[in-house]
Image (cartoon, rainbow, N blue to C red; front, side, top):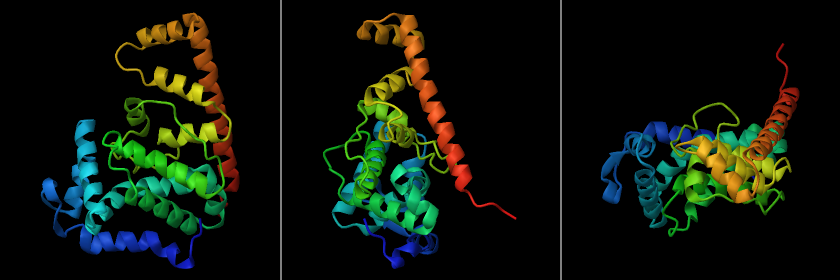
Length: 256
C-alpha cells in the first residue's frame, strides 16, 4: 500500500471541506430526508437502538454506491476518529506512524474509504462493526502482516466490542476493543479461542454468574477452573498492553 506525498494533506483537506461546505450544506439523503452534513452525522451518532443505526449507515452506503459523493463523505467523516486512532494503534502502522504521522493517517483514511466504497450490501447488521473490523484487516493485509485475523464472535458480540456509538472521539488508544483484540491475536498474545471466551464472559448481559456457569458447562470444566482460565487470559492481555504502552512511551519525543 503506497502513500503519495500529495496524500499527506488528506486529513486537512477533508476537514477543511467539511467545515467550510458540507457541515451546513443541505442535501437530500433519500429515505433519510433532507439534512445538513452535521445533521446527518448526528443521525448516525445519536443514542438509538443498534438496528436503527444499522439502517442509517446502510442507507448512506447504498447512496454512496449509487454515486452520491456527499453521502459517502458523511460516512467517512463519521468514522474519521477511527482512522486517526488506527494510525497510532494498528500493529501494521507503528513504523509508519513513528516516521510520518501524516502518512500513517492518510493511509488509514484511504483504507477506511476503500471499505466504505466496497462494502457488501447484503451485510445489513453490525454495519459499524463490520466497517471497523474490515478496515483493520485491510491495513494488516496491506502491510504484509497476518492475513488470517478473524474474531470468532457473533454479530451481537461484535457490536459490543466495537461500541458502534461513535465514541471514537476519545484519545484512549485502546478504547476500540476490536483494535485491542485484533492486536492481541495478531501478535500472538491471545488465541482466537481465548478472545472468544474473554468476550463472552466480560460482555455478558443479565446475570454474569449464570453466563459463567453456562460457559463452564459447555467447556466441561468447573466454575473455579473457568474463573482461573479467564483470569489468566485477562492477565496476559493486560500485561501485553502495559508492555506495549511502555514501548510507545519510549518512542515518544522528549520535550525540552
